[in-house]
Length: 84
Image 1 (cartoon, rainbow, N blue to C red):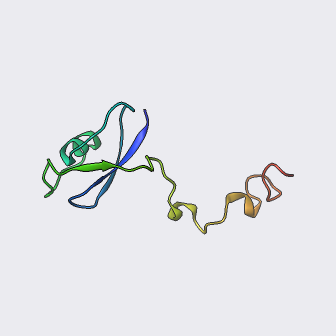
Image 2 (cartoon, rainbow, N blue to C red):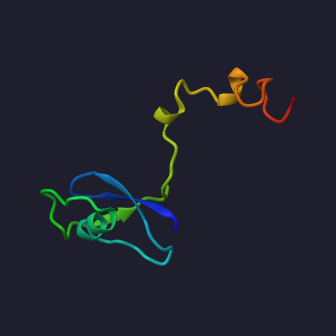
Image 3 (cartoon, helix red, strand yellow):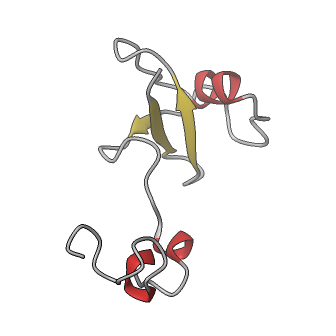
């Protein structure tokens, strides 16, 4: 099942959830229920929007120093993957 990122217009939070491609969540309450998180102070009927990026987006912070792993010769031994 694919993952999707939704943003709540009322609180600015982005939440990632899994659901069928044919489904769309439209409220904070639906999103929180699907994600298993507490709605907090945000009204359950607050609208949410699915982001075009979808889920499983790699953020720059997860890349460490920003250099690809092959640049240090870590994955291929030669530093240029597939061109050794």
